[in-house]
Image (cartoon, rainbow over all chains, first blue to last red):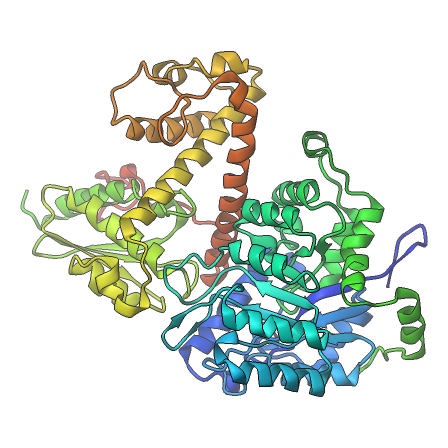
Length: 340
Length: 262
């Protein structure tokens, strides 16, 4: 919970966090090392200096650190924990649903645990979705369409196999489909940022919500165009958020476009923890104002009401979270400052 | 002076750097030398040139890396004394494939086989040329509008007219020179009487299209800047340096300059 200087309470949902293990002991090969090195460079490149972590901590942090950064020192009330398997790079995976479940189970009121699947697994993907629902009662998934697998050079949300998975998600009540549209490793020269497949899937699965992570950057215009057409397409602000510090004018321009095209009800705050920590992002965002020229040109405002929607109310709606009930539940399960 | 005399060597290294300064990163549209991508240039005894370069991450798109390596090879090969050029990408997942492919003059598909999908390198090159043209145009249009120049006058400016125009800040002047360079490429040079502001297919803009054009160009820039800001930050973080201090300039290679042999 964040309290403004005037005493107003702002409920915060962090839409994208990870509990990863990229320690040298878990690195399967050079790619595992280089992958976390790249994340570490993102962390250093866009965080304020005083927020920089030592490398060893960044490679592997414990549950107590994460709980403190999000909920004790940080203002987050509830965090959506997203998996990234990467079993080719890490012996036990980078952060699988099973790994994430360890911390989520310790703090069931605090975490929403999401799963993942690959439609190219065919029947096995359907089995796995059943398993995730039965074991973890997931309400959402995080998908990577650009990943290579054997002879396949990625997949599309409107592939027949993917549609079978979405039909099952719909049936089981897994309504929130987060899609990573952003930098990828392989394929080497495919346009992995292409967001056009979202258009088909969103039209055909009106019961599902499609949250495009990184708001489609660097395909912001394509993403905005699709999100305007489809009422069930949302933008996740992971990776866009830290620009608020490193490049505030750029952040303002992007936010101006998003507010102009999508409006205030379709955007979700996210830190992408542990690449960035939520406290400074939330503080800077609440203090942030759009420059006059952008407000005037785009006819948009970044009011406190809009900020509250982006910081929590929009995600609460997608995940069916009753904020008043959640506040009471959280009050009954206080976190110890020294969780370790 | 013999080929191996120190002064000759340094003069040639300067020529190589000058050629490399004409090669831009496709996504960032900045010279590789200014981005700090070029680490070193080594002249071989047999008039070969090796260019060591690095990128912001181990994962940077292999086709972009290949494109840059190939552009460097082409640019340096135009020097009359150069027999062969060997770009040497370092610390990259596909360094071996890129280095071998470019040195052997393979095209991207042949160098990568099954790892590559179907977009030919020339199509990619054309796509990035267009983005660069549009991004540079937006900066100049914005500068002219900020100087309160009327849209009706902007659309009637010729290339020559734009070139002789005084802009009030050095940044704008640099942006103008960068745009004009691209504009000349579009008309194969020489056409000073042609309209300064055209779309990437060469069609002149009308007064009433200017506002919509600016909106479209802003979209191009916002996308490119996302990559640009990330890449610069990643490079600095990876190699723990501040922003690149700039590569040696010609003056550094002149006898008595900072880098001249002692």
